[in-house]
Length: 390
Ligand SMILES: *Cc1c(COP(=O)(O)O)cnc(C)c1O
Image (cartoon, rainbow, N blue to C red; front, side, top):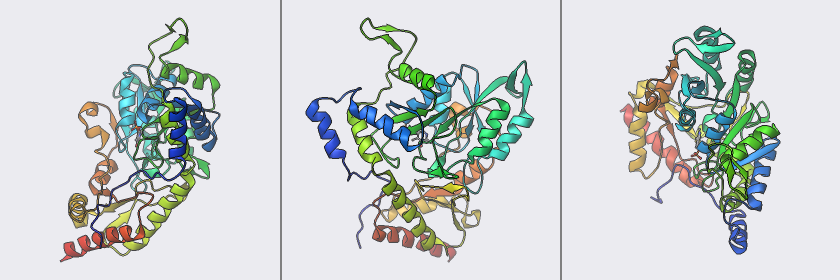
């Protein structure tokens, strides 16, 4: 049996990547403008049914600019789920605004819309036309649902609450490209949606990001801010403080080629998930983070939870056991309200995030994970539990 390391998730390059990158090199169109940037923007926007796409250097910068264009200002508050990658909370802080952490659901680990509703109804009040968090006296301005692990947030209630409370919605789809909510592609909701094409995402540009929107003026403003707020290209006149957040043509070329593979990759990830589900179904005290009835998930990272009966933070024992078997796995994120930069931010009824962070572990989920490799993972997980029982 092969003892090769089985990685958690690595890019798979087997489409038109070489061809498209070679075109950039052959023509010397390697930098921040070029036909692949335009093609990439069009392809991502089309894919999720949006009118406009604006490419950025990474997903975090996409969120930064999207929030700024959404009107988030210093001292505002933005609702962010407590259990996610740190990027969206950082983007809120870049603007001098503050994340407010709302819990996630126990079944799918997505933003808990029932708690969100309670936060808005019980914790906030209208004061001179503004919705204010009574604990902090700060205006609550936006909702930032993050579709984690390739699974959608329950978006209809989020959009309904946003309308009811006059909040702007910015979707973080960094982990959700290719997934659907009630048949609709993620990234098609809210004023703006942001993507990441980092190396560990379902498709990659090496690094990269994208903002999509249906509003032409909003798209134009995003483009303006990502290109140093340049107003006159000849005289170098800049209208405000902008950013150099542009994506290069070489990266976009990679991204275009990868995007052509998205359907195939999403199918592969769903197949991997269903094999894990079958292989691990009989393991007592092990559950998967399952798909909601309204979801078509990509299972970006297939994630399981170990019941407390197995031991406190037994997930970390499993992680070490798998590592000793040459199998890479990963816990979810440290809940954001626990992190030093966000400890003073307001959090609302957060319980599940802490519990899930203790219990969850993501298993190898690369698109080209072979059945033999996957059987090794399944066998190792089963042995871990069998030894634990004795
Ligand atoms: C990866 C990721 C991002 C940020 O993307 P980068 O391209 O790494 O900046 C944002 N949000 C979530 C949920 C992510 O997983």
